[in-house]
Image (cartoon, rainbow, N blue to C red; front, side):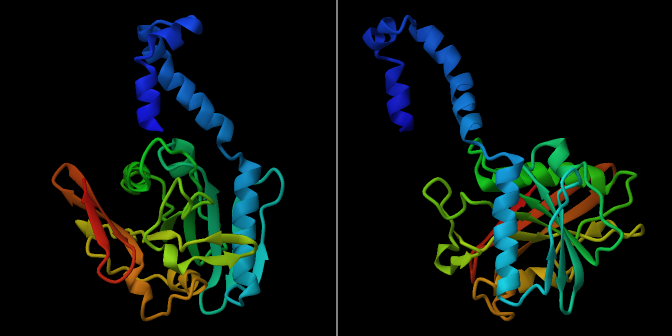
Length: 258
């Protein structure tokens, strides 16, 4: 499809019939693509419907004992009561590269663990690049003055596992609340420690909810570490660095440093 669109730019007769020169076609193409993307993008209500159905699937499987969905007009935060964990907050956000999605959030005072869930339907970047852009914003906040910290971030929506966004975890796809999806990409975030120079750099920070979430996809507690990624931060002098480790199963690991 991409090659077809590129070739169209050389079809002068076709462009002329539509009143366009080659230069005009090239100049207008990026904006036209973004308008098409925008028309297909899910709204907040669509994202909420997807995530509610998926989380209800956790209730149906007995992993979550109670699900409280966001009230109209409030922040889009889901409250999950999970045995062995307590109350887990899921903060629904869009694509990670926006300030609203990665900076403007707060941890509820009732939460034992809190996760930012990015439901991103933009195809502008690969998923890993989307995550990296979000982590860059989270790093700025981590070293800023705001006190809240996340226990993890999750990148996942209805495109995952489909033809537009193939997933290496496709073989673990299940039907959760009428939504057939592969396991989400889960990343454990670091805790703050004022005296440290590295935070979760090697991925040693423990969290309880990720393994329980993955159990809904048939991934056992013993297998879970092979599917749970992590984000780490490091400070060397005046320079701050990040590491993002993604895990897709046994011996399937990618690492990105910045």
